Amino acid sequence: MSDLAPNQPVLPPEIARRRTFAIISHPDAGKTTLTEKFLLYGGAIQMAGQVRAKGEARRTRSDFMQMEKDRGISVSASAMSFDFDGHRFNLVDTPGHSDFSEDTYRTLTAVDAAVMVIDGAKGVESQTQKLFEVCRLRDLPILTFCNKMDRESRDTFEIIDEIQENLAIDVTPASWPIGVGRDFIGCYDILRDRLELMDRADRNKVAESVEINGLDDPKLAELVPADLLEKFLEEIEMAKELLPPLDQQALLDGTLTPIWFGSAINSFGVQELMAGIAKYGPQPQPQNADPRAVSPDEKKVTGFVFKVQANMDPKHRDRVAFVRMASGHFKRGMKLTHVRTKKPMAISNPVLFLASDRELAEEAWAGDIIGIPNHGQLRIGDTLTEGEMLRATGIPSFAPELLQGVRAGDPLKSKHLEKALMQFAEEGAAKVFKPSIGSGFIVGVVGQLQFEVLGSRIEMEYGLPVRFEQSQFTSARWVHGDKDAVEKFADANKQHIAHDNDGDVVFLTRMQWDIDRVVRDYPDVTLSATKEMMT
Image 1 (cartoon, rainbow, N blue to C red):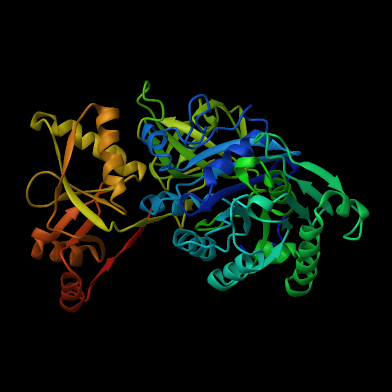
Image 2: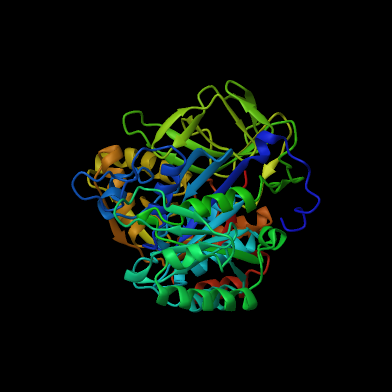
């Protein structure tokens, strides 16, 4: 991406005003709360919800699965579109819990930037670091929001140092906090030379903003207690000398991140962050595809599926494919070519999301994310075009780290179980392997919590109680190589061979020794821990 920024084409105004980004963070840093406030300021909802809602407080809009509401975590990425300050924001909220990181990795292939949320007390946590590495692989521009400044948080310089050291990225302050914890009264907006004061009484109220002329403006002394003012002036002077100024090109290249400070639950600092995304965030970027990259200013429509969600509406048993529009101006009712099957597909009821609410999308432009309800035709990695045989690339599928057998509580319902498992496999919620020997299926996931989610979803969505059983296998690898070599290898290792839901050959392993043996004895096949979702 970095080499495309300086000489990028001038985009049509409708496309240029789009900002498509994901929010990433460690669980509990306040990501879903921040998403809610974005929707509040985008005019998309009237009152923001809370993740753990008490009594009358509303539930959050972006968590729509029962389990998400019960546990107060996000387990599935959801997309939302809304307008703010003349820009169209397409926001993808991702699961922070590491057990659902694969959904997050795939989501990051569909956005142009990421907003990294960190907790002011905890700084950079393990999952933030992992997700940041994925952004780094894609050179994604990152904007940072340091949340929970109204609680006891760490020293501002300490937080910035930690980001610079752990993530090897330059940090420039876009705002600077005044006081921390109980003494936190607001921030100085460096980019716009304003003082933002926080109102603790009303959480949904926009912060009071006072325009000041430079740091020697007498208004500062009137509004900020003397001890806090002295400390703040000292810190801001140091920050200006020690930290780089905001350079938009470095931000777009992914080498510099601006940081805003605030408190999402108190609606503080959120609007400044949104204004920063609008002003400095990237416009829709070219998307990688084979045999050529797709530029957003191309006239013809191209889009790719980065996520499939089954049963978003339990009443309709439907599946919705989330499609990132990569180029052109899409209109409802258009016929597009489904590249994998080479068949035309009329897109008659595409939807735009507001969390679990949806409305018909009459049109969409490059950068937008739309949902296409379908009955299983669309899979992750599929490409839709106006005829050209392009295939989206770079959408990963990872080898599972935990494997278990699965059986239906009622043996007569094993056919139903197979259908449910295939649906979840195509959605990317789990890997499903059919061993060559014996009956039943083996389910592979990245984290233990996924088994619970899968069990509860199969029961709720299909009325089918299931039980998971210990498997003798501990990991799986995809087998690549010449067709004859793969067949010969599969015949000789039948007890270890299974097929995934695409029919690809998979080698199930019990220990590292199994993998070492294959590498030694079968030089003409390779075992891989990732598979590109290409069709």
